[in-house]
Length: 114
Image (cartoon, rainbow, N blue to C red; front, side, top):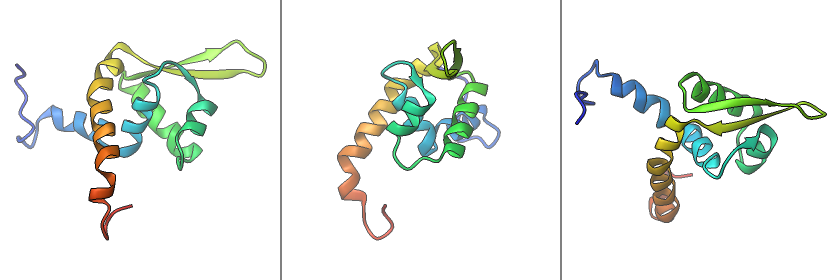
């Protein structure tokens, strides 16, 4: 059992939730769940994400130990991203959340919906 309580204003778990609870973090982690992907493959897989937002999201996830970047010795040079062990531990909850969102998208798409 954790000593953290997300209801407390200064709880470090709130920072963790802030890191992983935005749309692009969830989608990127979910997108890397099938294994390593090149940047361009990941961008093509995730509809509607700009290069800037994908780069920012990958860097944020990398800084926090959820994703690792690997330079590929290819011509032309390429980069591949994969989930770390910590990132893989997040994949289960993210997958459940993404599937729930897919299953209930129509129910929740009202005037304020997408």
